[in-house]
Image (cartoon, rainbow, N blue to C red; front, side, top):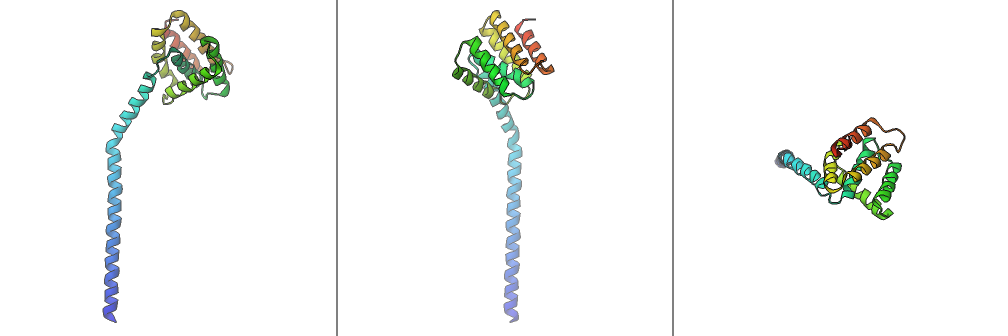
Length: 175
C-alpha cells in the first residue's frame, strides 16, 4: 500500500512541476508580447502620424479644402452641432452652387480629412495655403464671410473661433 501511495505522490509532484513549467511558459509569452509591442510602438506611432498627415495632403479640390476649413471653424467652437452642419451645407450650396447631395458629400469628406486633427487651428495654414494657390482674392473674401457665418451659428463667436478666423484672414492676406 505504501508503494501505491508513493507512486500517487510522485505523479502529483510531477503534475505540479509540469503545471508550474506551463505557467512559467505562459508568463514568458506575455513578457515577450509586451516587449514586441514596446519595440514596435515608435514605428507604429510614426506610421499613424504619417497616415494622418497624408489625409490632409490628399485634398485635391478647393471646395474640399473650404469644407475642411468650415468644419474646423465649427469644431473650434466646441461640439459640432446639427445646426452647424446644416449651416455649412447651406453655405456650400449657396456659394459653390451645388446640390444637397454634393454638399453632404463634401461635408463627409471634410470630416474624414480632419478626423484625426486634434486642434482645429492646425487646419488653417495648410488649407488656407491650398486655397490661396487655387483661387483668387475675391473667393478668399467669400471664404472669410462663410467662416464668419459658421462662427455666429449659435450667437456670438467663441474666443477660439475668433482666433481661427483671425489666423485665416492673416494667412489669406485679408488683414
